[in-house]
Image (cartoon, rainbow, N blue to C red; front, side, top):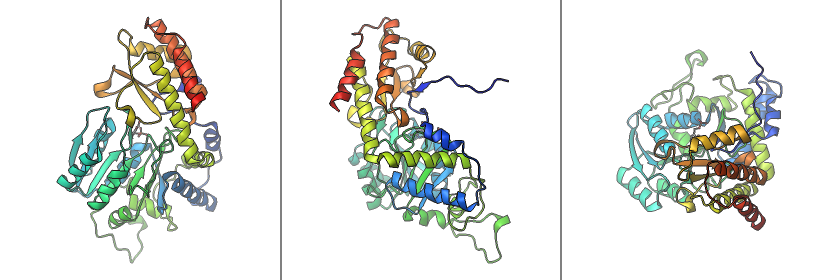
Length: 405
Ligand SMILES: Cc1ncc(COP(=O)(O)O)c(C=O)c1O
């Protein structure tokens, strides 16, 4: 069997992206036991760092061991009691994922849908909340399948006024776009490392406020083998997953240090370093870096005569959807990007499959050189596909956008 020796790819799809080398270095540190005082301090430090990233004072700011989806599942299975009404605004594939998870948790799901490429207005969301009176609203911030970002400040207010809990899937935007959990009344927010946080997938930061804690901790149960004599289970219905039981994970992260899973030590090192890098740069600077890369990428693509996908006033600042021009074989072009230039760009799902490419500029790859090299390679590949455009126009426009920024 051969040694694993990956090609030096530049990952410019909708995530995963190349990890920051500092994160990879942190991951090579020696392991510690999960109850070692030094490791408990690293856990506390990681929680504190992520309070900064989520812009929150929430005590319960933790890491779920798993990809971003694990935190979505932990949030929903811990919040939802069977029969609860859950409203899911769907504007792309990841809205459908929340429907699927909420249904498995026994929710009565109400989906409201928006055409892919658009987002909801506050008035539409308010009408849906007032009509259906959900206990929980579960929504994506940025949906990478469409490259759209749903404004959430208004929805936070609407949920508060209507006594609904708001869960936000910020997998694709945390660290790249402004998302202040406390200021926007977002009750639970979760993410993954492999997009704007510049890490590998496999650890999922989550934060939850006192409103969410009250619901979840009422359902607290302790594993039989860990119970002491005076133990009384919570009054609420037991959370239907052991691994994703947030009440148990809270007991594990708190000073109680009650045994649950064996912490994924190396992934905690990674998550810790991702947040440390981001907070060193400063949130505002990181958001501006993503915006500058996105504007340059968009300007470059347009200068090549390509059409961007979706409502550009609500586009995520870390990924751009672009129509595959007529006469160009989208998969063949992506393959040429990968095999000839070592650059990965994304295809798409569902109704957009074969129609658009998704080109990312996120986390460690939200850099001028990564944007320019990707555009230059795409120009060469499109010329090879006999697409007619002015050679060099894309890179020139992107350089000009950077010069103006
Ligand atoms: C908005 C959103 N939610 C959830 C996920 C799923 O994340 P993971 O594959 O890390 O479980 C993704 C991945 O692209 C995403 O973009």
